[in-house]
Image (cartoon, rainbow, N blue to C red; front, side, top):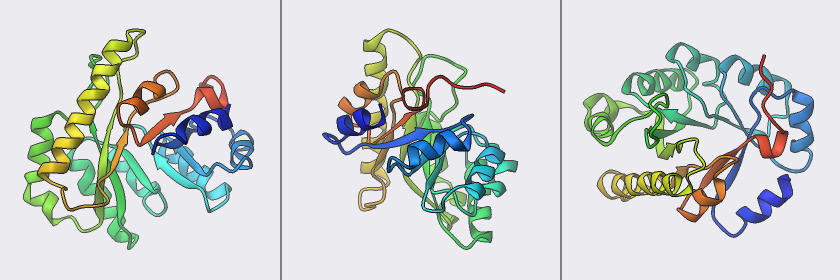
Length: 219
């Protein structure tokens, strides 16, 4: 299934983040040995343990809701944090990145779904964040794009509209804040059930777990 997905992504610019959360190292290594090296986790301790145990050429992404007190566990190695939804979190990422003498790439997460349980900024809170003096002072984070999660529904038109919303938000941010920033180029949207729609609407990064690893294992 991995090769089928990668073949489908070849026709677009989208990268695949293999969502390995809850999966044992042995299972992740099977995917790694097929040549795939980008993996996503949503628990800081679990990510740290897997990073320490696995090959160092893996590109690790943090894809879940990240608590500020957990940033320190992943700051020395994480390549991309997908779900930044507050200035407070950015401040801590910048602090921990500085301690590790590196710059950490981040995506701004927007709330595009009808489900209220999902995290994310809206346009006004994003503007407030980006215009703040605190944000402008950060030297150790780099905003490289946006992320959003569509509603979990069989209604493809609704999902399509939510992906279109995220693409419009990206375009507006690019035009208003990042027009000369070549690093600001990522739209992380699309998962196992809707990644084809996401690619159609301009996704540059899809997060796929169950199609690659099977259904999630809960502790």
